[in-house]
Amino acid sequence: MRPPELSVVVPAYNESHRLPRTLHEVRGWLEAHDLAYEVLVADDGSRDRTRDAVRQIQAGWPQLRLLELPHRGKGATVRAGCLAAAGRRVLFMDADHATHIREVEGFLDALDSGADVVIGVRVYQSGTGRGRRILGLGFMLLAHLIVLDDPVIDPQCGFKAFTREAARTIFGRTRIDGGTIDLEVLLLAQRLGLAVHSHAVAWDHKSGSTISPMRCLVQDPLDMLRIRYHAWRLRHDLATCRRTPGGGPGAPAGEAHRGLPQAHAARGR
Ligand SMILES: Nc1nc2c(ncn2[C@@H]2O[C@H](COP(=O)(O)OP(=O)(O)O)[C@@H](O)[C@H]2O)c(=O)[nH]1
Ligand SMILES: [Mg+2]
Image (cartoon, rainbow, N blue to C red; front, side, top):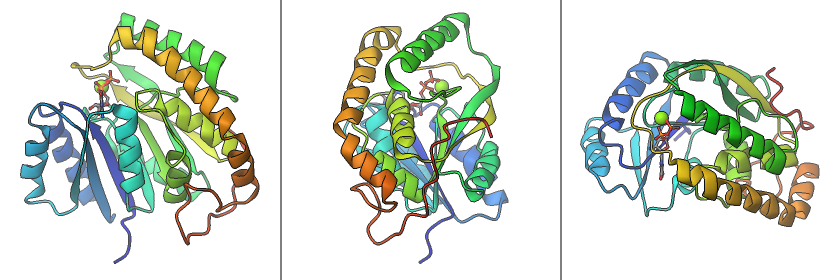
């Protein structure tokens, strides 16, 4: 059977109230477009009825898969989902549908034009409160101080797409289990010399955020240091993979990686 053109990975933790509507909207859009797809809900050991809700929807929707994971955090869930994805291109997006699935069109075009990774940039934002914006700026400052080699306009946007090879190569090397995995993904992509493109998206901030300010202040900086340390430990592997496309533990067996272009991180091209 041919792989789907697109895998949509949705990490979920206690999302029984928001996810069914998102799945309904995502299905509506995908089916209106001529695209072979799968949707993977990666459930992070939810304690509400998220899994039951997905199972119910699955009954009439064969392209919907449910990954049932023990609770470890968003990063672990996104990683498991992206590594389990069967599609030729892999998108991850938030369960609350803050960025509409329709935006994926531009992402697929960018992947078809040579990008390995396409990251959303929340240019058109609505509903993001003041406290949240300030936390975001603090996070950005630390991300650029501690983690990123090259500039990235919006590292934390929860709407990112990958070629299958890039998804395997990157996520196979990530370690972070929490929400800072986006930074780890970007640092690894930079070190691997992958082509990272940015794409403007609309972001409608939904209520019910699970972001905890305490976690941002304590856990995130520690995770940023871990990301940096782990990338340093991987330096030989990353340098080898950069020189020999297709090599490395995260690459899919038997699939040749097309030539990896030199790094041009997130220049909004
Ligand atoms: N797996 C997992 N996913 C989480 C966790 N916290 C949030 N998420 C998911 O991450 C996405 C974004 O979460 P959300 O609460 O909307 O964050 P925000 O809107 O960025 O403040 C959603 O798909 C959530 O289900 C977690 O602890 N584990
Ligand atoms: Mg949200």
